[in-house]
Length: 138
View (cartoon, rainbow, N blue to C red):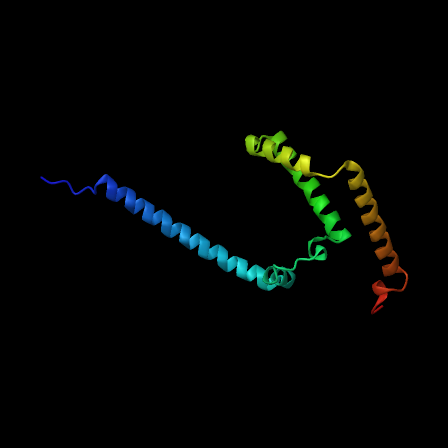
């Protein structure tokens, strides 16, 4: 009676072919996603299309973007620390908490950003109640 099992070499080749096909599909999907992102963010498209001339202005963040990045870094550090304390994926949470804590800006910057946000909210509220944008249609 002959065995109908494939040889080990054919099994390895078959597995490798399947993995290669999967990787090709993933690469194509990522290429499609990159194309959509480039279409939705014209500045990145211009930057990539004109790689020979990258100005410093293309790489600088506005003060609002710097504040947002700082707050997001602090937020990530806080929530990974919370996950670690609660025992949710402790190894991952500990590593990520340390990573984001190291990348987080000093606490003084957080206080300054919070003060800026509070000032902006007060200014917006004053405009809304002082006959500005908030009274349209009354």
